[in-house]
Image (cartoon, rainbow over all chains, first blue to last red):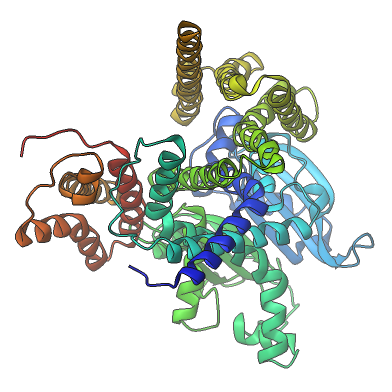
Length: 527
Length: 90
């Protein structure tokens, strides 16, 4: 039990309630899209009908990369990024760093090439600044949209990032004040929601979900805020305070001194050999490779690895590009292993839940959805307690519309993607689908009588979810037999997940309808 | 291995959580049920069932299985507590 005076409890309750009320709906959208974004990789694979090849970075790629390097302007060989997209196509970005006249910042500029992982055919080739050449791949529209919505709330950079960072801080405040005001946290941990009135039951449900999810609410909020503010504010602040504004000195301390320049020509060592050695040392295959100073004696190859079995932390291994020799493991912070570096390396896995494959992702999705439940029940509690006041009474429909309208809009975004895949601009239609779904939810929420509102929204969500697999397949997406044949069981799993979710919401809507009918019959019988 | 360890740990903790919920005096009192008699040994056994899998995972060095267990234990505790207690013979 946490002992607080009545006055302090009242103050903290006000902070808890007001912070949740003012920012609650935005927080809900960020947390819900975050829960969905945990499966961004899987959504990406599902949206393009499956991967063409599993573990594409494990196949030989040295010759392909070398051949393509010979086709790009020499200045684009300053740095080469190699990774694969959702369809498992190899993506190579040969680039240099120049000032973008539009933004006034130094940005990546170069040639982006998509390569088929099976035939090695060039599928697409674009030249321009990073922000122009990335994000136009039609297959990546859906998963990128979900991530962008979570990270930026569709607001322009960096304001969206700041907004979601602030929402993370609000979530931390709500978790902390919730912990302090709930005096009997342990004693009430098993207290099932009481049936002595809707308000009491709702309060119990809110407190229960908040209690069991408290630790993760704090972890997810902290790591999310860290991602929003570390690069934009944190690092410059460290440079000013600890290094007197000397960014070079700061970078040398935090990242390490750059290798001495040696522009003399030297062929790049065998990439495949480096990939194999790196995978053997790291315990997992590399999922991202960066070659700096291609064709020079000072070339460096950095290979990024996901956490190996049993571990939470991924790794970055560095090789000498011209000799192919292993140079060491690069710390995320500083040049030597430290508690700070280890902590920093945990931020990503703890936020994304991607450290142990699908299982950890499923747990993270459930935790995210639990946080959504806490946010919405908290808002409903606040509003229902103030139903006597006209302003708060008018706000209640908004909570229902956002709570169910956001998933309707997300599913509509997927419809927009599938309907445009291969025939129109998927990025535009995914956005239009989202806006269309949001608009339909708002209209439904306003037009349908209050007693039918939730039922109408649940039925809409069930309908849009149920149609999704059929729309995907009718627009040329792989059938279940094709998906199974190509080893893409994930596609079937995602379809089944949509159908199960549709069934769940259909049952909710039907039950709500039955309860509503029973109430009407009782009123008529009494009359 | 992570998958197996996580499932095993969650299963053991879930048993402890169910057992704890069925003995929780406040939970039972609120629903008009007679709280069961609680012994120190019983409480200890329930706590061990809930926490031991996590401690074992931590000591074994399986950080990913431990983190999955930590997250799943919160979800399991929530689901267990959400169920309304049924009348039992005491």
